[in-house]
Image (cartoon, rainbow over all chains, first blue to last red; front, side):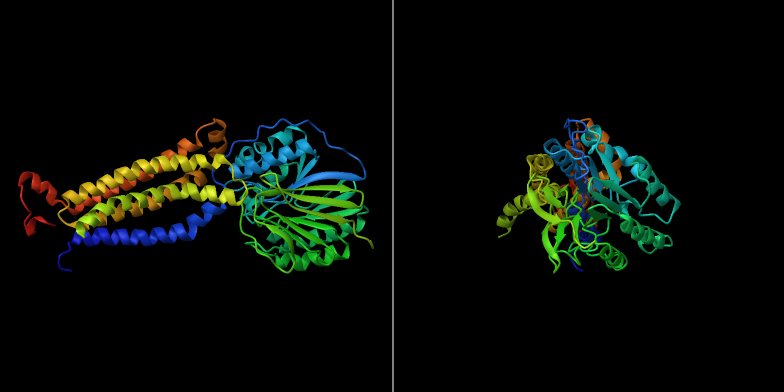
Length: 322
Length: 163
């Protein structure tokens, strides 16, 4: 074109191409990640807690549940700090981890970052941790490396298996492996038969199932229909009271579905938007964890936000007709 | 009209430059605010970016004003300025994200030393700013090589001297 030099064309063309490429990369990948992730390193909570201060009795139990808290970033530390402060007010003896306890690397390498530092005050107070493994904990599960990752998590958290049962006061907790191999893989039948048997054998007042992938969710990932199809008949048959899950980075509670209340508590360090579905009773796109108090046949749960506010509170009565 | 445009262009360019540098820190802050964190701690990166961005906005505005004065062809100045902005936009966002993501194993040691997440942030963004500044100046120099000839042979360049 008359009046423009070859160099001008090259520089302008390079700039235009760069602008288009930058736009695609930034808008399509980087910016959504920046607003969803928890990448800025955080300072560990410095809270000193009274060791083993929780009350133990056969008719009551108090515990916390947190999902998707494995970043080691500022938001993870803030939620962990709030959880330690909650222990200071009303001590609890254990924490249920609803999966994805390690992002951005291997758990063995990041154990200090994502677990020992944020949970330090609770660990020092003697609080124990029970894990339902998540998809980020076993991304490469079909490989040797993935299996090693799971084994490392189970070993470091003293977890007996990828699925197992614990009992606390009046509640039996059933931790389920909801990953694809766990739900549909070669060993999945064994797990479902185990769950069926364990739920049948459970004589405690409360039956709570904990897994990573939610059967009901209005969030970014949404409901896990495959797991729902397999799992729901078993849960209905045994009158399970409550299902706790993570995976989606928000809080959501359903109206009872076939008598079972489902809760997503995945705001342990990241935060994504949540919509509303027919089954939604309460939902909030916040950083949060759950505090659950069970006294005899009454359960009170609170969704505690990172700012200390209670975003949702609900009560359940142990289901009748068992 | 041209004089008015020349007067307005550098400050407008400086404002865009400022926004591009501050945007990633603002994104982090807004994301944590949306989650309910909303405390003043998240402001440290925003403030650090804003200080860096203010300094660079002044430098970038001055560069543009300087080039307005010396450019033989106005298009050279704008091509160089836009190229610098593209590099800045990409690097100021991508480099911090890459450093925090790629070196996640170092998070604890960085935070535990009490240091310097904010220094690291500024350092990485400083690299982005330097890349943009070098790009802007180099492209302008590359597009107007006749400026070198002007030192030897003052006067308007002949068509043959303009590459």
